[in-house]
Amino acid sequence: MTGTSHQRWDELLDNIAGLLPAGTASVVIDGPRGQAEVVAARLAATLRAAARPCSRLAGGATRAAEDAAPAAGTIVLADGPGWRTARDWDVVIWLRTDPDPDGDAGASIVIDLHDPAWPVIRRVAAPLASQGPWYIPETRAFFSARAATWDTKFGNDLPAYAAAIAQACIPEHGTVIDVGCGNGRALPALRQAVGAGGTVIAVDLTPEMLRHARARGRAARAGLILADVRQLPFASASADAVFAAGLITHLPDAEAGLRQLARITRPGGLLILFHPSGRAALAARHGRALEPDEPLAAASLQRSTRTAGWQLTTYDDAESRFLAIATRR
Image (cartoon, rainbow, N blue to C red; front, side):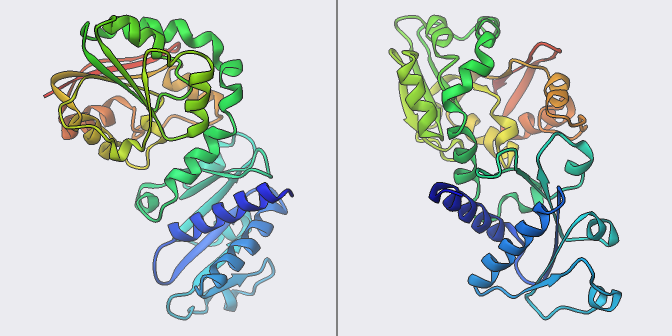
């Protein structure tokens, strides 16, 4: 591995260690043969380097070793599908190399290992998601590696962006904030919506995405800001509309994110949640099944928007796109 790859692995392992519950906990790592064992060994070394006791359960462990009560504060760590099904675990870590809904199901932490030299935490279950500073480095690791080729992969989606923005009827001469703007795909349509007298601001967490937005000329009449959606640097009630494409499912706490978007939006202002694929099509592309409690499922989004201060007025989950529009109460 290169030095950069070693740094990525070290960062990821530190982030996983920070996600694990305090005190005694049982953890199993599952995934392709050989890889789970290697990752478990490296995680054990990371935990011990941080002065956190760790007990490894080897593949040939006896029943007595499995049932032995660990010392207080110890992380009991095992790997492989045999261990995963042998007992209940506090944390299940799944190493994803190919779409596999059975592997993802029930996992507490999902790690993307499509590129073994550049692993990324892709999903953390709600009970753990608030633990540790994992969200920013893992989000940047995922999107920075894809920033240069994003348009190559999704270049034909721009008309769908424009159609959704036109349907939302953003006020002319208003202020619209594109939160999670990526490489600026929505910015030309947002500028057209508010007109020359309006203001367009684009926010993203990944510097490489903002750099590519500038390079493509999409930010010529927009302000670009590097910021975390969970702590947006805007005054309360300062936006007439907030646009967010593909954002909500990337947040560790969707409802908290919706509350932050509500804070910066004036009463009566708009929230436009968009994706150029419907939920079913996106799930199929990723090789997973739709779950009824996903953040963008109709009932979940109705509940979370209402709790966060929005009134959901449009919900369109077609095969070709997802579009939800809400009004700030």
